[in-house]
Image (spheres, rainbow, N blue to C red):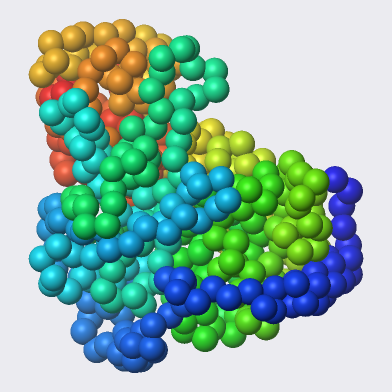
Length: 428
């Protein structure tokens, strides 16, 4: 894809916006949960004027959530909405089963679920980003993509257990258990800096939550929303994204299709053929400083983070959330380097499982070592965020691939991002 000048990009946006207005002016999205309820406007004012110290900042919102709700809580599915033509992305609207109020969350945070596995006595723990607006006071929304077996997996490999449970077993009235909203991938409060939101595939979910928050609070910030997906069939939240692009003067929407089909309409469904790249952002970044938020698959994240650094973007202006395995390049800016160097090969004893294994650097994290050798381990985000995998260290010490969002208590570790410093015994 050839690089574009800033003038080209702006011209493209003007033409695209005019075309979309003509094409989508008659589209009705009545009945969609995307539209804010009348009572939300009243709640926005209440939310912004709260005097309680629990709700003044993002961290304090989370503190408030922890005070109001500890451990697991039951939620009832109130509604499910298909979000793309393929039918493999669905939004699940969850209401507290006990009818009690739920705490607000910070745009960009996630919920952690204990998901039952048919035929297994132990649930699996998974994290899904909140895709609704923080102004919605009665329910939470998560948007989940159905995950199949990996393409290179051997025959008989099962598809993603958690995502398929959501799609196949959660119907209106179903109950599922979740932990309180968590995560540090949050929109900065009280900032007027232009903002760039970059999403790939279903990675748009936390960024859509940010977009809804900016819209609900009538932010006047300059907003650029870049979304990369294969084609119209996989394009998630199509109606909502087109609607808000038409209705928000300070929002610039740029959609890239990497594999458009003959039915995909240029400058209506999408604007650019190809993948999102740092070069596409260069004209914008030359003209101003921006806060950048990214979420998507590992390949996209690695390319974009390296490219943005190459353009001289300050590290503190780049924040990201990744799903699936993410390379060291992509997480380097959040890493905390430790002075100790792990041995080339060490013994790791999993005391509860009665297994002692040899660990070497190519084995990855301690959690990967455990799972690859048939040791059951609770885990969620696998990025050191949710704390689900926290495990006691009975002997030895660990170092971290990146700084945990919340440092574990003394004598504990997060195996999902930990590697042994030497011979190690874990209570796992």
